[in-house]
Image (cartoon, rainbow, N blue to C red; front, side):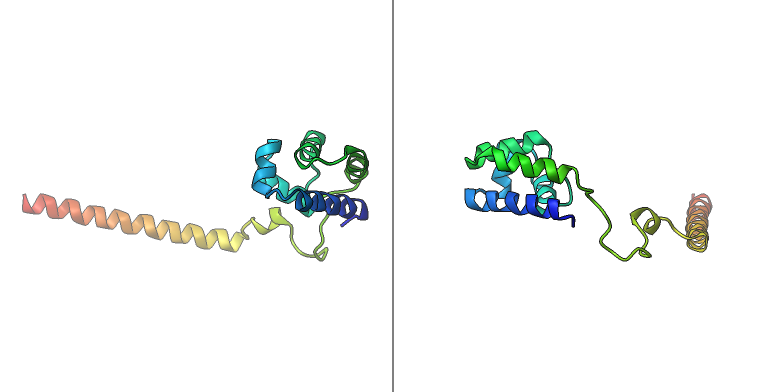
Length: 130
């Protein structure tokens, strides 16, 4: 994590802790949901200026240093991969290989075929017994 983001998120975390407010309460008072605040405090996302100002107001904090660190952190790259460079990203991880797609297609064809056989048996039994 970029040091500018680390410094800013540490201050955000201290602000939340010192205020005695839960993240749910912070979310209620700032208009940004808990999941967003978790991303902001963990350094996974840069909060909007309005959210930072709302937190400062809810926590009774001075905005000067907070906004300075917010601006510096905003210049840093968020969401940079921390894993090994060869590790596939989310978009590659969700893409099935051609062999996997083929197996899925064969499985789907088998299920459809089985349903057709069951439907035919039920219809023939109904016609024969009627």
